[in-house]
Image (cartoon, rainbow, N blue to C red; front, side, top):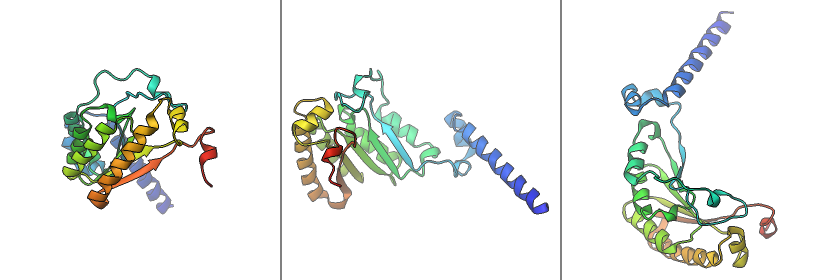
Length: 212
């Protein structure tokens, strides 16, 4: 009976502590800093999906983001860096920079390097549909020169017109093809510091193209 009572008390104390931690996550940054990083040991995330923008020029069959009105003032790179320096994020291991379409941000290179400065131990993943090779490739190269360990995921939902139809943008596949070729050249130059992957949305329209 004593063991059960002790176990119940321990469980209750742990639950109360977890509740207080989660409530304090919504407190002002100065309060969290005063508590110290050890207080958040059990609630610090290791994965973060960062929407650099909600803007998107695609009209994908499987997504409605491109039809939404984007936010008028997305966070600047310096603001992102300040936010990610909060002790809450000190154990991040993966940060996905996505959107919307992140390459619509002309300051994408600054975003990638700001995230790296804030959480240098994290692997940064850039997720893009590659509508603007002239932006994504220089941004990736600038991030690599700044010491970023980077993975770039490019969306390919079919070949040629099939991809364009899925994404609702004529000529998009040509931009994707150029982007992948130039990223491959960067991969040869930078070695394991850069990973290039191709992703695909599995849905009724693309399932027939998947080789089981």
